Amino acid sequence: MSLALVTPFSGSRVGSLRNTFPRHGFPVTGNKSSLTFRCSLTTIDLMQNIKEKINDSLETAIVHIPSNLCVIDTLQRLGPDRYFQSEIDTILESTYMLWQQKHKIMFSNVTTHAMAFRLLRVKGYEISSEELAPYDNQDGVSQQTVDVAMVIELYRAAHERIDEEERCLVNILGWTTTFLNHQLHSKSIPDKKLHKLVEFYMNNYHGIPIRLGVRRNLDLYDMSHYQALRLKTRFSNICNEDFVALAMQDFTICQAQYHKELQQLQRWYADCRLDTLKFGRQVVFISYFLASLVIDDCATSAHARLAFTKTTVLATLIDDFFDYGGSRKECYNILELVNEWKEKASAEYESMEVEIIFTALYNTVNELAVMASVAQGRSTKEFIVGMWVEVVSSFKVELDAWSNGSQQSLDEYMSTSWLSVSGKIVVLMALLFIGVKLSDEMLMSEECTDLSRHVSIIIRLINDVCSFEKERKENKGNNCMSILLADGRGITEEEAIAEIKEIVENHRRKLMQIVYTKGTILPRRCRDIFVETCKAASYVYTSSDEFTTPQKLKEDMKSFLGL
Image 1 (cartoon, rainbow, N blue to C red):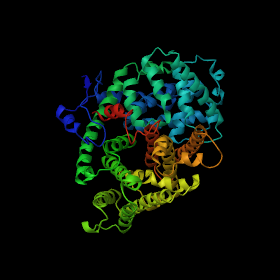
Image 2 (tube, helix red, strand yellow):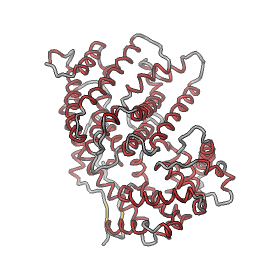
Image 3 (cartoon, rainbow, N blue to C red):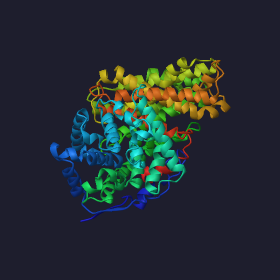
């Protein structure tokens, strides 16, 4: 029995979303996914076949480690890896044992060596990057045929640098970047899919959330790219389309869920009267897109994506109100209301806008707090409201500094701005709904604070770089770029950007150190959300502020959400 997979949305269902947020995002079209694959096996047979192939005994598995690592990479790139977690864990445990033994199979070729390093490090195994030192220049791989697929694996491995001292990874990243750029510019990659895959990686590797990579790989995956590791021979009864068909079915199920959640957000936005406000960025659609990139489990994480989106929308709206939408008196009124946390009669609000904003915040937060308390089995309202007090207070500090014309140092600026970017509250609100019990001790731990700070600083800095020119023309407050340019050293804009990029990379390494460490306070599922949020921010702020005005991302959003 064959299985044909197409995007399972009726015309009426897509049509109902065409007018979703007509002035609060980009216009949604009714284009269906063009992906259609015919699988040679039933889904259940295919999954069982893959499981059987990778469930060899350890003695037999040694010779198959290279191809089994490719299967893990394939499942992760295409998305259905969560159905094979037990098998993946078994393979990586065996791989780690062989790595420690320096077994010859680990060094049989450069691709296996680099792939094993990347998969083990990301999983949290303590392994030294010095094992890759023989490849820190192109001459180190000259004894083998230097092909694009091999260099891609070294390039990906080099991005898993978690320590400033890992110079060999810096060197590997340097020469592989040069090599792959040359291959692109000289049009030396005849395989069109491989050429596009290299372009995708080279464009912004740190800005590829896992789910975005999955969607792109549904178009670009080809088993033959692993031909050096005998994957096709090992899985001779499973064709290229079988892997993609399994992944596509999984992905289209998620797209159906995304449509339901977008409709819920449309109702929420209207019920809160947020569509009546005449100021502020319209970010519902882009916020939900980012939530769906960050939170990957479509079956059990709907509330997490909705909490992520609603928190992002409300924080952005209040931030805009403090920036330019309201008077200083109105802004102070919002902070007073948040501190007091009581609904008022209409006459007690400073303005209609203040009433709409606070009422939307008050009702949404109270509703989310009730749901989070059920999910967590304890009261969460005090914690959630406390985070909002923290965020809105940071908005006030920035408003006062700008209104008073205060010139801040970079340290002074970052001490507040990492909170005002709202990364902490957005991520922690989502974490309350991902099916993991989180105590107050965990949420207020040094680890959780460090994760929140690293992610938020990265978001703040890359956002500031992208928005610098626009904010300078509009004379809008402080920005890390303006602070560096005015600190008396006489540096150029290019030098300021270079400094900021180094700070970003430092915080990215520290973030990865925490996430890749086993046995910490927060479960790995929670820590991964911080990493994916960081990737999503890097994706949105690649070269311009696509969060405020999504242009380049429009096609990605439509393709990912199936609209």
